[in-house]
Structure formats: structure tokens, C-alpha cells
Image 1 (spheres, rainbow, N blue to C red):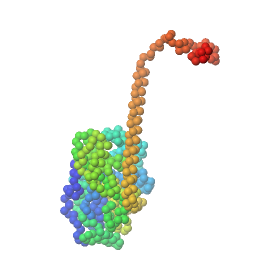
Image 2: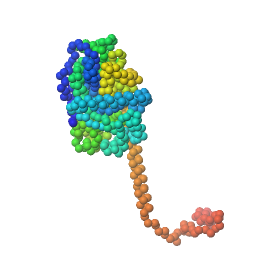
Image 3: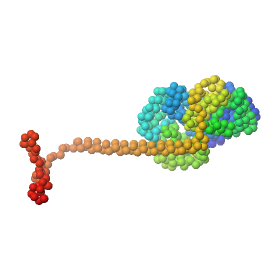
Image 4: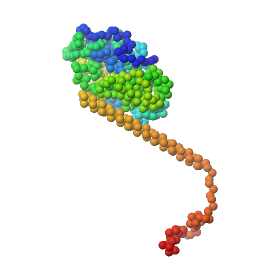
Length: 498
């Protein structure tokens, strides 16, 4: 199935006419602030469980990161698995990982069981390393498969390069159960499902103020007031002035991606892997779409910028990784902001009675946002207490403007060190290859030398001086010092010429 890369506002959506600005006062069980992936999942699940739900969106459905990403769905969090174990211990880490797998399974189930049109689901994800780290790969594979019951495969260098025709990557971890969807269409279809389940979605309705005190919380918008027993804050970094302190616990990171023009047969000659590819340093993320186009995400900033500025940057990045593709044409560039927490884990849970948060999903947003939406809805209506697994990851101030500058500098340093490590790894690999070639040549020369007939010894040449001729074996008794031919210097001394 093909993907179309239209604006999220202009994409096909038969539910758009049913979304309007909130212009009248309303009482509901649950008010969700933010119509991204997490907020819409809360709305869908709560409505299915019988609650009355209103979703307030300051702009339009899926306008930010939820509708502007590559659509890769796989288990895990932004925090590396080893650090997760160190932070909470193995048992809690297992439970948190299981929740992330449930988030991925939820998206697959919704997309397939609801027969969403145009989702363009494709299977498999490959995480590749730009350094030769075989031992690290083995250790991680053991952790994922044995301790976290995740289906993974280790790919050696030859197999990675058979699928990706580039010398930039070495080993890889393949996730056969991971998959990709058209993220823009998925979030729009999710809104349609929520509306049909009974949730009411109001676009162009920013929140002016929130009063979370009392049993019935009060929300004020520019043209109406709303009361609810529970408020779910799912607006990520865009909660605005009423919740600025909460927004400032997230470092905003804008990620930019491009879709190339059709590349024809030359794309198949460079990339045969049909799933998504990410490098272990989180710099590049790409996959084939529409059969012969390449969707590629790479640049990041800590401030909002016009996506079109990064088209040439992505062009150069593609040419660097896959020189055979050369300079590709770019048909679309887009971007969205993710909220990155200081500790790398999402913010999921109850801030105070009746006030919930679901945000901070970082670069691993698809599965974690879906999991958070499902978990919060069930916590409110069923009393599910698993959200407490996220309690060790508290709300930590991200540093404001200083944090953005530091984040930008750290990002630049990380990219630079990754590039240097990759260049060094490829240099060492080239050195090993040259050494192997040299050793092979020496071995071949030795083999050929061993098959030649032995050389006949020539008789001594009488023209040589006596001292240079082979001397017969001495008949002197054992222990006697054999005579030594006098040197020219000693001959001159004896003749008195010196």
C-alpha cells in the first residue's frame, strides 16, 4: 500500500466536519487536553469503557509530533535498557518493558482490526551500529531475548551490508515484530474511532486556565467553560501558559524529516531492507515508502525552525551514507517537536487527585504514547495501578533556555563523537582488510615457493679468495679453536704497511 505525504490538515479525513471549536459550556467525566496520539488513545479507550469524554485541542488533530514522524512502532523507551535496569531493578524494568510491548501491540490491533485504510503497514525494524561492537551486540541480545522476552535477531556485518549497501554500518539487531504505519493517517483515523465511540473532539480550542481543585475540575477556554471529574494533560510541550511549570519539565526537540522524489531502480540497488532502519546513536532513521521513495529523519534543533531549511542537510546525509544514490531530489520536508525528559522516561501518572499527565515520550513516541493513553484510561475507570511503575521518574525541571542551549550543544557533541567513532571504526576495518590481503599474498607466495624444484648447488668458484670459499671440516681436537682467515686489515698490519 502506498503512503501519501500531504499536510495533516489537508489529508483525507471524513471526520473533520464533526470537529469544531467548543462554543458552549459542557460537563463530562474526562477532559483530555491535547489531540495527539496519547490524548486520542485516552479518549478512545475511556469512551469505549462508557465515560463521557471531551478532547480540547488548541490547533488541529495530530498537528505536531504525532502526525509528523516516520511511524516506526517497536518496544522500548528513550532510556537505554541497561540504564533502566540500573534505575529501577530488573523486575520493575521487565514490567515497564512489557507495558511498552503492549503499546506496540495496541497500535497493531487498532490498525488491523479496524481495517484502517491507507495505513501502509510494513514489518520489521533494524537497529544498526556505526562502530564494530560485536560483544555489546551479544550482551544486548541476551538481555532482550532472555530477560525481556523480546523476539530479536543478531545480524552480522555481512548480513547488514547485504541489505544496506554501505560501509557505514556494522552489526545490527533485527526486531521482526516491529512495524511501520503512516503516522499521519493513523492519528486521523484514531480520532475518527474516538468520535464514533462517543468522545467529542474540539479543535481550535486552547485552554486558558485550569482549576484542578475540588471534585469537579474547571477548565476555561476562550469561548466556553468545561467541568470534568478528571483532566488528562496530554499536550506535551504545548500546554501553554496555564501549565507552564509542567511544560518546563520537558526539553523540546524538533526533529526534521524528508521524503525523496521517486528514485526508481537505484534505490533497490542501495537498500533492499523493507522495514525501518535506525542507528544506535539515534542520529539517522529511514525507511522505504511508496516502493521507490526514501523517508529520512536526521536533523534536530532545540528551537522551532522552518522544515524546508533542512532539505539540503538531509540530501547530504543520504549521499554520505549511500554514495551510490548521490544527490537525491526532495519532494517534502516536515518536522515536529517531541518532549524529552531529563531522565529519558515518559511522564505517566496522577499529579494530584483527578489530574493526570501523559507526555514526555521523547524519540520513542508511537508505542509509549499509545501505552500511556490506554494505561491512564484504565487507571481512571478501572483503578489500574500500574502507572505507579513510572513513579521513580519524577517531574524534573529541564533547565529552561539554558537547558535548550545545553541540549543543543550536547546533541552537537554527540553527533560529532559518533561521526568520529564511526570514521575510526571504518579506518580500522580498512586496516584489517589490508592486513588480511597482505597475509594472503604472503601465504600464496610461500605456497608457490614450496612447490618449486630445489636449486642445484653450484661448485665453488676458484676465482674467489680463499677466505670466501667453503672451508672443509676441521680435524682439530674437540675444544680447539678453529683457525680464522685473516682479515685484510690484519694482513696490512703484519706486512707493516700501516
